[in-house]
Length: 382
Image 1: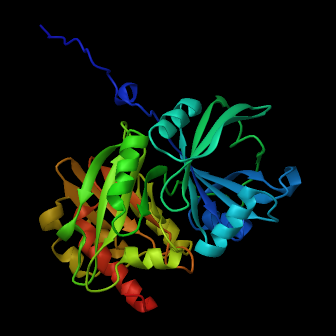
Image 2: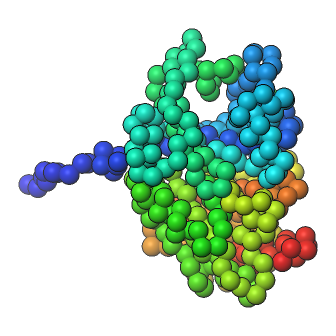
Image 3: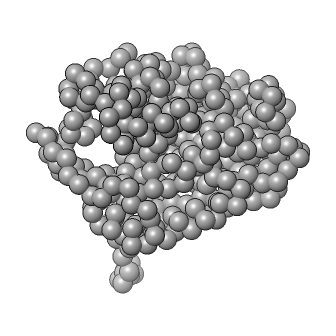
């Protein structure tokens, strides 16, 4: 006879979540030339242009290109001629920070309720909830501030079936994307904040958005002979939205976080991790298209099998492609990091393939940071 249990608590984390989310809606970049950036992410990252807004359809101030890959969405916006607070903000953002992320937009079931909860719990509201409509339906939008000049737009799009938002029109791909997707979703987005600010922003997400602490890395967890940092990870109740927050730590030389803060001009989004089902195919395709990845010494792979165990990818293939492995009590993951994708040593990307593990590559931190330090030294910034 099978015993049944009556649940007196909510059966899903979302039902109990004070700030329910549906996932990442979009990563929104302010760039100097959105047309060229869209071409880069189409050809190098295998993304597909799906929507556009610009002078041809009524946007006299900005041009925006929307690219997707599976559930991942990038919005690339540049200013044509600033005429509003938003246009002047974007122009000054690019001038001060270079190409970078201005908005980590989050899809929510109720933007009005989410905004009200966030502001009530201490968030600085940027834009109060408002509706935008077209023939495809209605979207409700609101925005709150987070670290640096980054914001979270809260997007309620349950009653909308257009290509992105009202004001955007469908667009043909710039190039045909690869037959197999290079990635399927946004896994996590990492923010860098100033020394002593990490706990403040972790507390912000705990209080303002009801996020919980997922992981913590301090001290020797993230340190080499020369540089160190500290990191904590916050996530919503369903783990669909994960935000690691980094701050520099005192060390002999300048850490990657110090370098980022210096060249970005303050706190901001450091990297976006992209989830793939086949990291080998992803890396081969992206390398062939010109994406540059961080190098890893062959010595990393000499003893890899002894501590990482068996993975679906042979060690020799990992060595060839410089892919890293980490294992924890739940499984393992495969990951690799690009070099910065612009001249400033700021924003870069991570490709990650998970097999049970919900970690962030703790076992690879030393190898990763030594690789970053080699690049810093080449730039004269270590």
